[in-house]
Length: 254
Image 1: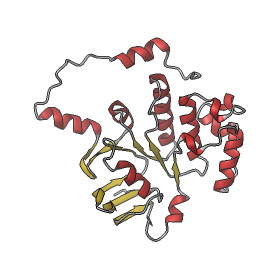
Image 2: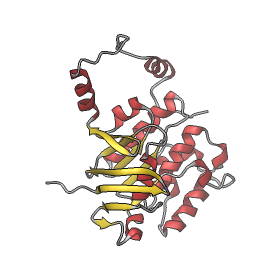
Image 3: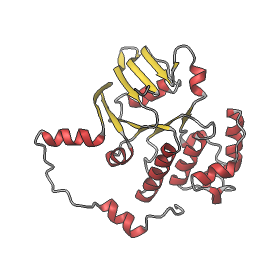
Image 4: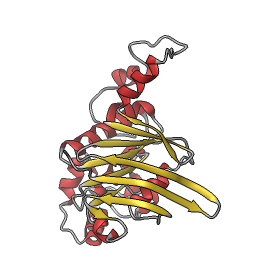
């Protein structure tokens, strides 16, 4: 039987009288893309930040690749990659300089051009971060998570605010990261994104997991209750039209 790469048991987080996370438990298997879904304030980001060692827990047990969070959080930091938000970068440095900077912080020798090529930004090597489009900034942010060759990558709403083409490009990147052996934990507000990318999803609401399974299984279970959408589903949607007309291929974003 495969051992989970992440195990969360009865996780609680309180801020005074406010109970943000109320006994969450789940496991993530190696090589899986696992989604945490939920409305704002549901507790999903808090849960991720605790696993990432960025926030302390009130109680519960967390194991990451066999490492107990309570006993050796620094060992966990060495095997994970966490997507930084835009505010985490010096806007006036170019991408090569930023890659070298982060390599120094990780104490890792880096090949900036190879990493930029992996996220299709090799032609932007000398561009400053502030000059990038939204999609390019997100891809660069993900590239920085790969510097220390992590076993696990955490992506917190990586496609928020991107146009449909940039979103699809980022989906391809996430799938490629998993194809190369990493486990990916992702939060998103886009249900179509979770349906395409995630092997399993946990739906979180008011600090609890209210459903956990494969996306297609959760959909089948809903249909089995007699649920019907009020509008007949077409074989395509407007986003499909947009992608078809503007091109599937990866291209520069503006």
